[in-house]
Image 1 (cartoon, rainbow, N blue to C red):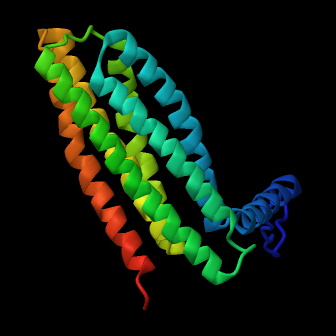
Image 2 (cartoon, rainbow, N blue to C red):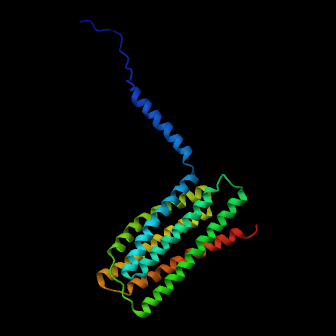
Length: 238
């Protein structure tokens, strides 16, 4: 049997279906990148923040009132402040591209100052309620719901804060950066809340709850002070 002296050339098989699919994915990715600008990503992060904190705040305040836990109520009120702060940030971010640069800058300053003031208001409430509970020795009930909520928040909040901080750098937004710090402070509050509720649940240390609430005050005042300083700095004439 004679063999052909010509060598057969190898032609790779191209699956048209998969080639078109790959092209479609690449085009979709490019289009999505064009649609999802940093400002739109920032808006989505704030929409998520508002939605999450509405649910978190309702659960925390309800469970805190039932259990008589100032740490849990304070945590819920912090969630309410996060909602208000998130709405202010949404208002500020939606101005991008539809307002003059000076108007955007003015919105940025107002948002930062609002975040700072909200921290101090919450700190004042927590100090008052914690001192009252310690003085009158008001014993809170155990709250398993509060413990689960603190654990979940301790997982979600740091991730959300880091995402906001990354976007804030991209769009150079002081307001979003301050809001990211507020979200990060929420994770610190989750930890102190977990310690306070856990000590009361497993060891019966009733005083751990108001002390955990007071431990939150440090973070609240620290972040509030930084936000106000940054806001006033932005208001100062250049």
